[in-house]
Image (cartoon, rainbow, N blue to C red; front, side):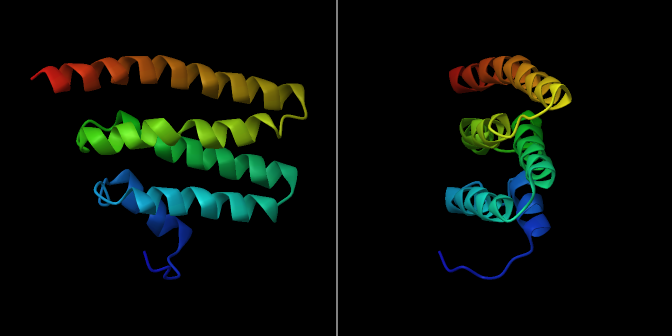
Length: 122
């Protein structure tokens, strides 16, 4: 994959729209770019960035208009920003935010994993 300078938000839109469903390298590039950006930020901004990436991936997983294999790919990677976020917990509020996100992921992924399995049976 050639590495053109693509704005971060354009990568997010491409991922959320499932426009690169047959090119998981786009998702991997997005995730590595996130890590590069986060290393340059203070803890608060890095946490916000990881929350943003988590939400992009989770929103994609929950969008039933997107190809199931792309949604599954995003589900497989949604734990990455969450694990980065866990390492940035400093305050009680940070912990609350993290556990709420983890809880939402557990509930939504359980629901959508069963929908992936049902689609595979048809």
